[in-house]
Length: 110
Length: 114
Image 1 (cartoon, chains in turn blue, green):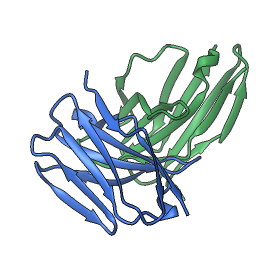
Image 2 (tube, rainbow over the protein chains, first blue to last red):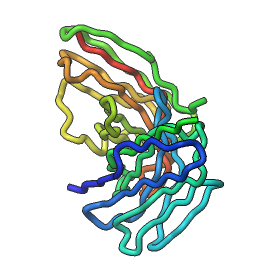
Image 3 (cartoon, each protein chain N blue to C red):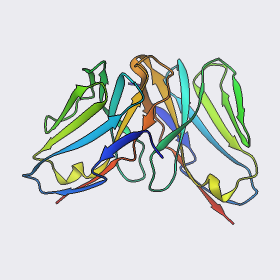
């Protein structure tokens, strides 16, 4: 079955530093979604990427989808304490079944 | 605030008990999902309902029994659970089950099996 790997597992940054998490799928994806889960919270949808090589921005967040549609990345510029949480990528298959990556837990020191 | 409501928020039960988890959404979504999430792990899909019919069962043990009474409600009936079933149970919904539609998650029920 499909596997989605995500690195790193954890990242500690000083507030103001940049952060990147990487996602790799064992199979070509029709699209990829990104979710954020705050400590004690539930996953919240951030964005979806569909096209090969697609780049989308949301304020300080930049999302990329690889040319082969097997990898993706999320980059946060100048992290803030409000960025704390676990970021999950999720590969999407027919039937809207999501296969989540292991997640990257971001901790930001003020 | 989440538009998907789950009750109860916390549940402690013994291995011989029978209990139910409830999920409700009023967004008109016709796809609903149950996930299980262990601490520091990603959510794992358990069941998918599409137009009130079970469309996907990810080889979940029969001690978990889902039910979709109507388009707004989703239940998960629990019976004879094991300690390893302790986890956060998340309900989610999307407009339909077509690919690429965002899923809206509830806050979850934190389940502890004694």
